[in-house]
Image 1 (cartoon, rainbow, N blue to C red):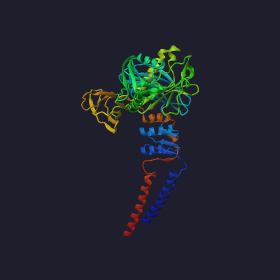
Image 2 (cartoon, rainbow, N blue to C red; image 1 turned 135 degrees about the horizontal axis):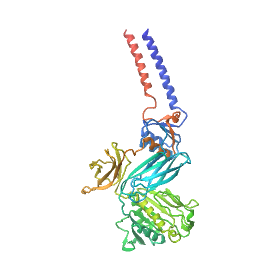
Image 3 (tube, helix red, strand yellow; image 1 turned 45 degrees about the vertical axis):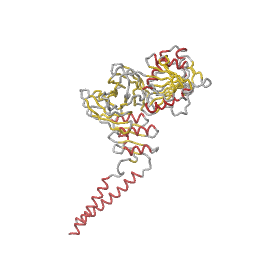
Image 4 (cartoon, rainbow, N blue to C red; image 1 turned 180 degrees about the vertical axis):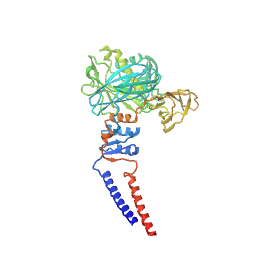
Length: 535
């Protein structure tokens, strides 16, 4: 009798479990909503596929564990494309975050990427302090999404390890970077007949110690090369070993169509560096624009020309070209007069603005020089080195990971602050890209050097791994500021607890414990029947 009762109970429980499985399955898979819920167990490939499918349904990350770097980047890209992305964080998300420049150069302007969270329209005052004790203040207005991303210009005061500290009320964030020694720049100007704009541009750069070479195209594949106003030689394009500078300037339409222009454009795309295209247009295309009608924006490294009571010639750039990514100077009608863009590994700036009136008409030669020097230095910060090291800050006893772009070395070493030196293994994933890592035991800057040629025993400095105590913000902070800065919504976990939606998991979409319970009950019932049969 007792066995019959057990069998009946097992059958009843099995039926209830089967019914619960069906009901849960229907509730989970057939909800009339396109929302997807992801967590740290969701496979990254599944999240990537979810983002790539281009749907319009909302996506929510809800977990007690922060998303990894790649998942956060994928969700931020979805938010930037207009998809509703919600990140559920424990407690209140951070107010301030900052990312250091990848490779700043001593005494050359660079930029910090700052993320600020607050109420829409709120003006947040921020103080900025560098490692030398210099203090500056700025103000950021929070956008409609609640998180604003802004670039703040900084100028490293010394070589080596540089540290910037930003504070907004009780919140603070810190960024560290390795500052390289200042390297002299070389500029090649390619033109047909130098005009006023070209002459004053060359004078501005030479006054700051920048080496300038002028290549004047004569036609029929002939050109004259000069440096410092002194003509060196007459050269031909055919079979010539082309030696571009760090930044190249294409002045006229004839020069832009020359073989030299094609060589320079290919060099910028493949090797890096900068290309400056002066496109003032023909006389009939130019218009008179007052300086106070110009609106300046663009990269934070640029020092805009001052607003003076003067007129200047300008030709709006064609906006149907893919090279226009970031407007730098626009007129009152919205026409783009100066635009900056990334092209391959290099940087490009196109300008239809004639700037020499700031000298003759406005009496601002120093401002004119600062503008062009800042432009040339920004252009030169493209990938001009044979190899470029990139990597975020780390903490002692945790793995520092870096990436090398460009010509991969045969030997890579790291110097520790305590005097030790180790060889690092380089894992190549492409012809021009490799990854390396090591576990630092002390804080500070760990210089990394390389040897590119097998027969060369000299180690060349590449950069440094930055290791500091407590500078890494928590994973939630990084994810919240990254996704929020791209237009995503930030909520606390308790607020998001009521959110439903279909879950995107790496495994099956049903709870495995239900199948286990059902199997155990069926096995128990079979065992009881088997025992009764034997009895």
